[in-house]
Amino acid sequence: MLLENKYYKVLRAREEGEGKAVYHVAILPDCNVYEGHFPGNPVCPGVCNIQTIKECASLFIGKELRISSIKQCLLTAIASPTICPEVDVQVEVKETDGKYSIVATISDENRQYMTFKGEGV
Image (tube, rainbow, N blue to C red; front, side, top):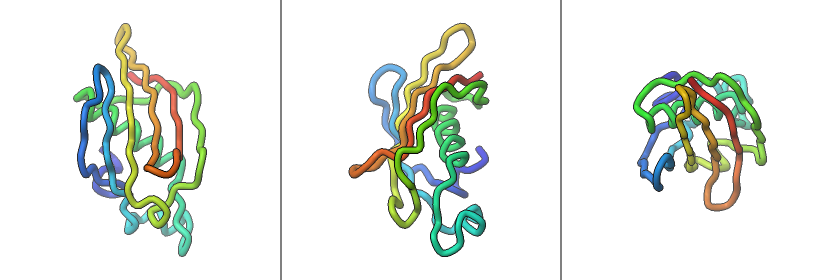
């Protein structure tokens, strides 16, 4: 895992039915990614959010995934460790013919920050 315990930390996880799980994570404000994105006004980079989704999906299925395609990825609000220090990463993963369909969101009780649909192998 590239970002776990550096960019985010899983505080708790729960399954929500077949193929679904929610990872409640803390966004770690001391991560060095914020030195460049942006000093004094940290903003969570979309690529780091996608990696977090991939890592949570990998944790859920118990094997390392690689994102092979992104069908839809929407940044719906600005996420930041100061705005939303803890978020839920909701993942739904379905396997078909060795490929994994991933549908995910990053949100808190106030708003949704990202939606994602893609495939992994």
